[in-house]
Length: 176
Image (cartoon, rainbow, N blue to C red; front, side, top):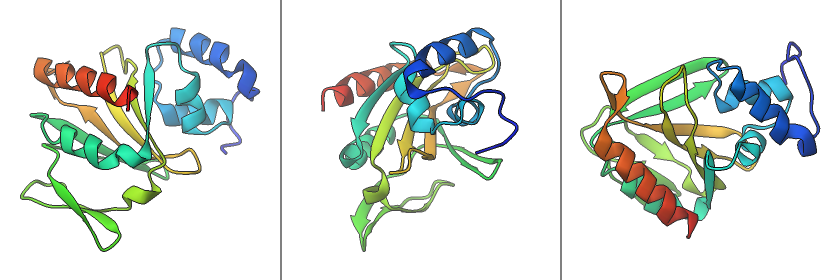
């Protein structure tokens, strides 16, 4: 972890520390909170205040991905070694083959996902830079976010149909 982090907390005291940090209105993300408290991104997600995060097992990957493909707009984000890559598009369809979930179609987003390496999926509702924000976070066994898909926006606001689809999917998957 980053040695410049300001505090280390035990997992038992993480929830109140997170609540306090979130009150500061900084542009927090799971990764920055994890660095701040020397824990994994999954640890942060699990200890967020009630209503901010709901989990479903990684075995629901295909069901979740297919539902995300129904959104009219999304932002696919990968953070790697401090770099943030964003692709704004519709989430394309895919299919399982040769050990991967293969993304297909004519969208800007393409590639091959090791869906079996996604252990947990979280539906996160956490404001960012003062704006409403909803995303689906895909975690690996080490508790790191592999990639995220954020609800699409127009004019800095979440598209109403995408918000509604996110909330329905979150509810459906929390019961799965």
